[in-house]
Length: 416
Length: 58
Image (cartoon, rainbow over all chains, first blue to last red):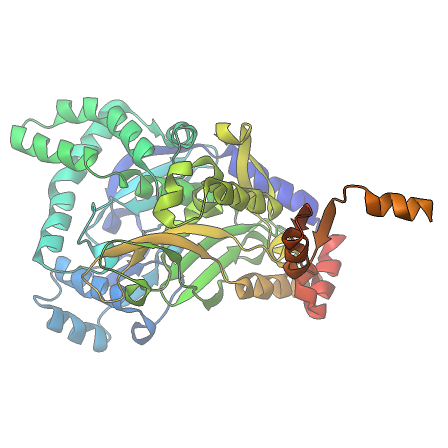
């Protein structure tokens, strides 16, 4: 098959740079995600069966079943799963992404992000907050109560606020936050603050009840990672139009389900190229060690797929200590390395501390294999036992095998 | 011979490509040495090299 990789990759890079992701609404999963039913549960990473799922993912699923009212106890929820009563779906196949365990279910409210340039939509749940949360596998009554509050109260306040404000340009917020030292994966404090500054003037106009308004304001301003989910939806909205460019060797998705790491490539369609996930290396919160950590999990590597997160670590010196990098110099070296494996640079995600260069953009599977340099991801680390939550943050690499398999598949296609 | 003597009597600055062990030897002798990170393309795997070569010219 004759295709022009250079032109195809140039088109892929152009589409990434031309994306215009806008937050336009809050929608419920049941209304917008394809094939979403009451018994469907979306999860992070490539598809896998129940018995291959890690502890936090199984814990989150049992909690999600309770949240949807399909069972009134975790034991009953498990029986339902084992009886084949739940349909598991990879979020990416539903135009959606979710952090860590990535739970998306029928009743959940989602950020709706519209890529104005290409007319596509992408979705991500609202960030639950810190501590004991479903994305880390927690599933007790406090977790369900918080999710119900998101569904029944916060989502409507956000929906009405966005209607009043009009579409919110997420690309601008990300660019500003990058210049302020965020990398949008493990450090979102600037981005979350900028978003709160944008939305709160409208929230106060649409929420009459003072008690509700207090809880909403505290929730929006009390979580440094709130913008992560918006960054993820931005990433998905950016990358989906890059799919299916004939001859394009750029990565359109990287994602992990806690067992396997999956990569999708533009010119290779919807096929996942998978290999066992790596274990993040980093810093642990007091009382926890490497023994406690779960392997890599989450759709949040979509952030690195668009060139920020670990790829922009050189622009985020304050994240260095949090993820256990040795020094700012090491962080800069990571970004330098990522420029070696990407097709080009971002025209909007600019890093002032790195001589105003654009973030490394468009991971080329050929360059990954040729150089041996693996995409680097900044990530949270979950406890391997569900229900305990985050135990630290660290750096992890994508497995080389994913890129090798993709390269062989591309060569086979070229030979047809 | 003079050029060799000149070289060995001048300040030597070394660039080492490959095994870091060699860089350490210079460091131990307090001789300036820059370590260049280098790996063989595709880890030297011939099948991968063949695939890369096929796609290189497309």
